[in-house]
Image (cartoon, rainbow, N blue to C red; front, side, top):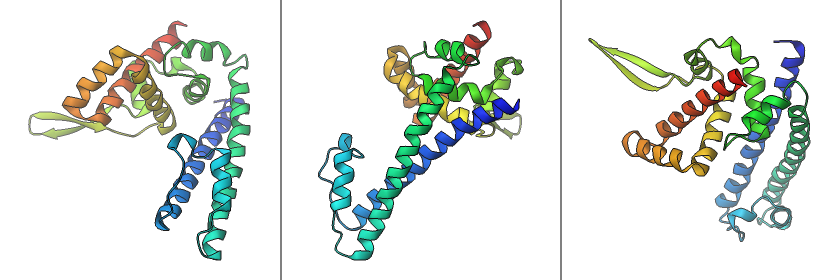
Length: 220
């Protein structure tokens, strides 16, 4: 990778890290409320809105130390949320740069892939031609099944989880959206879930999407 490509990858990875940190804080806030038997008087769709955050700041948990803990978590969430918005703006601007814009537009023609997931995939994969076969790309993403030998038989297990976890995560997340938008994919997913379980169904759809992405980038 060139220094520029490394810098672009770092920007996109930092945004993802901030999102993960924010999710951790959200869970910590809800755990604190649950531990203190505080019911949230909002629908789940209203959580983490301005009204909800103001309610949290005004909440009295009955002890100064608990209130201080809650305020610290709320302040941290607000900081991370602001950084997430700033970095999202920067990443979306990166997606419009000449180096990526055409490929971003190409990938976003696929249901389930938006500009953010497209640029995440592109900065992790970079030049798609470096993967000579679909199997090489699958191995890079950690979407190849593990193998176990038993006598004369070779058993195929869960995916290895080796390789680029960031690109794999984005691919599987996009697959979940695709399942909701593509009736045929949804039917296939349901059949696989019935036979092999939900996780393997998501991986199967993710593998299909991986093949589609590779072919699109190669053929332009």
